[in-house]
Every structure is written in structure tokens, then in C-alpha cells.
Amino acid sequence: MSGIACIVGAGDMTGTRLYLPEGSLVIAADGGLSPLKNEGCEPALIVGDFDSLGTVPQGDNVLRLPPEKDDTDMLFCVRLALERGADTLLIYGGLGGRFEHSIANLQTLAFIANSGARGYLIGCGSVCTVIKNSALRFDDSMSGYVSVFCLGSSASGVDLEGLKYPLNNQTLSGDFPLGVSNEFLGAPSSVSVREGLLCVIWGSEGNKIEGVLKQNRA
Image (cartoon, rainbow, N blue to C red; front, side, top):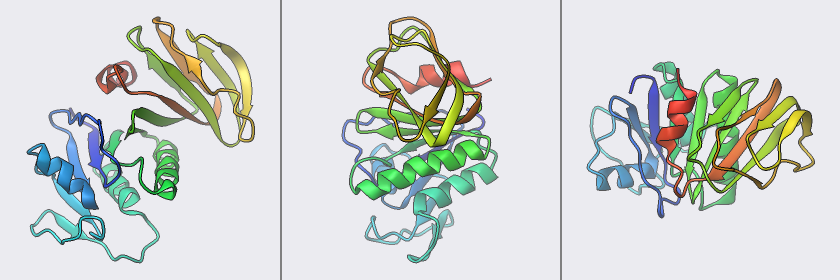
């Protein structure tokens, strides 16, 4: 599927189903090589300082990074994917483990949104994305909880439609979790923001990422 990159990191993969669309750019971020190998997938690129993997793989597709650097291994992989034209990035193995790594990957989603693309952080029973001045649509197959958080000082013109607790032209702030624990109703729904960054999180169990991509890619 043109324009999609799949990046697999070294975080908790327990119960996570890898969806690697045909034609997507697959990148292993350090220890993310192991779950890809278990799936019989040879990534196009293997990137990292390899502290998580514990060994340095060999091959023309290996890019070894220094351990002391500003970018995390995941962010470096994201930059590579964006440079290669990805507009949608599926990130696995970026949650669980050390909490600061999860926070770093949430910030990486904001970096992707600020770059004009869309990233999805998938794992530990959840999917998380960040949208900027745009909308996220869901079909009627979605179920369970969905939460919306402002990233930054404020996000204005927030609309939640088709959910249990709707909002219309609301301003959300970064210091009050008004959007936590909303619910899908088995109907088409959407989250949109006129100006600012919104973090949107929902349960992955029974909610396949394929349907979300279908609703939100041209």
C-alpha cells in the first residue's frame, strides 16, 4: 500500500497483531527486528544503536546509529520514512516498558503531525494518534472507549460527533482532561480540531486498524 511505513520498535508486543500492508516500507527500530523475524518479515531497513537487540546485525540494509544522539531510534526511523514519502506511519513496539520511552513516542506522533503526516502508535491494547488542524473518522464497527487530549496549551474548534459525549466547537486545554473515556456507539463518528494538536486514543481489541486507515486515507 503506497505511502505507508511500518516501524517496529523494542517495546511490549504482548498481544499486538502486526499489520504490514502489502507494499509498505517496513523498518526495524533496534530490538524491533526480533518480532519481525518471528513473522518471517525481512525489513527494508534495520536501524538503531542496537542496545536493545544486544547484537549488531549485518547487511546492506543495516544503519547503525551512535548511542549518544538527540533522536531516539524511533524518531530517526520516522525521519527516514517521511523522507521516503510516507504519509501514514504504523508504529509498533512503542508502548510499554520504560514509561519515558512511551512519552517520547507520543511526542514523536506530534512530530509526525507537524510534518503533515499521520502516525498511529499501536500496542498494549491501544491505538494512539495525533491530529493537527484536521479530522479523524471512524466507521460503525468501532466499539469501546475513545479518549481525546489536547497536546500543547490549547486546541480550539474541537468537535466530537457520533460519540456518547459530543462536543461542538469546544476549546480543550492541556491541563484539564475533559475528553477522557468517551465511548463509541456503533455508529459513524469523528474527532476534529480546527487549530491545535489532539491526541486520540482508543482500544485496539476488536477494532482493526485496517478500517481506520480506510476511513482516513484518500
